[in-house]
Image (tube, rainbow, N blue to C red; front, side, top):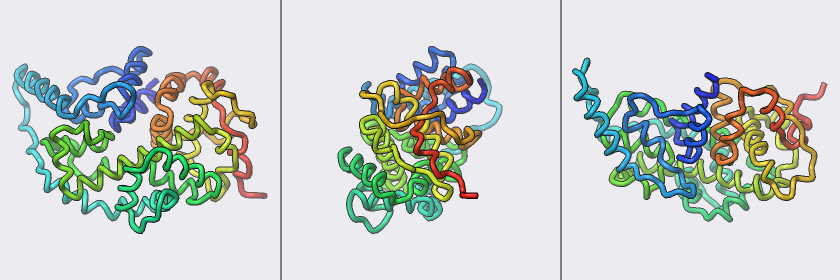
Length: 328
């Protein structure tokens, strides 16, 4: 139970659960509003583009501020509130960290070249952010057919979330910090409200494009997995090309989508042969699965601690486990 709770808290913090998915988890006793939510936490509930109308970040923050003021009136403050951090300071911090983040992104740059020729990461992120879904889906199909870039290299970039740390202190406050946190939770431009004005600064703009690009590519993998699962029936993983987070992200997404695949895939499927992920790797794997198949992955997550029922639903293409180990 605690493991599921930790996973859900991670997913919620990263804005990976839509309101419908949160309500589903709440009905099953796995999620509830946290005590003392601040504006940043409320922003994590912004809809990421499902069928329901997204709640604006501006409205969420105003609501949070009213709650914080009410909470302050209920009792004396034990210590002074941390000072607000300005937009320029946050933007400079993002730019300072950018080379470190860029070092994680070669796979994403190479993937973008399947969409159109690009020479640098910032251009690639802009292309991915604005590319039509058909172009992204075609790039996924090309990668699966050609094997380049390597899936493990792309997943390293897609699963990267290092921008959550080292930019602002966890206790930081102020409109710029709220904008930064709203961007990290995947809030689209139309949902940012007045907090979108920070995008005039290069640091915020680059961060926004990076988060949106990651989610756009995850979305393309989810669409192709649901519509054309036969494309994934190939040896995606070998000894040198194995990535634990990538493998389990795809396993969870495939298993979640399998019951609704029509017609049911004709290729061989089996229980995954790799040891189940733990800790950070498991949280990251579920994050990828939610971005690919959130509507279907949430019910699977609920069963995670029931080994019989969960194991009975966990399938992947048998080809994923062919040639995984180094020959004797």
